[in-house]
Length: 116
Length: 113
Image (tube, rainbow over all chains, first blue to last red; front, side, top):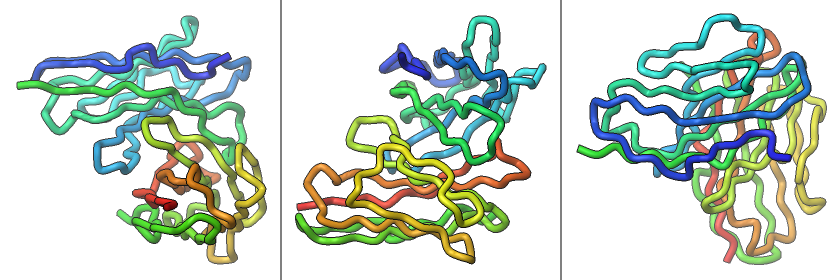
């Protein structure tokens, strides 16, 4: 079974609008972490935001927020006030277990295109 | 702030050749991860090291080996290269004290001709 599912292969959003990128996960661990990364066409993998399974508040980092619904096992990324520079591939990833050396498992990504 | 440094940025090799990719983690980060991302695919975990010891192993071919040195930098050695090894190879690092902050380097684009 897929551990991370991103059901939107591609999304369009108009500049200055908000957009939500979906991510659901599957784990039986009590302790886990959820990450979002941005990968522009230049290829680098840019860390955006992190949510721990025990964090009670939804994570926020500037224009990025993570809508964490633990019971539904979803960790959607919300980008507010979209900018042209937000056009990129976005990956949701999960780290299972409490060990700090545990690996990330990625979803298949969502390609976001911001239009004028 | 210092980031994860990978070298080289681009590498072109022929089939059956060898390649060595280098990764310099963020200062005070003790854990290094290697990922392989094929064209249009999500990153796949290869191997990780914690405090210079291998901590986890993923879908790394036997032709590949890696290690983490005393200064915490890591090298991925790839031998008998095949066309299918052409990919973007990422290194990431994190610290045991702040494990949720996992940062990636810019990657090494390997092309096998």
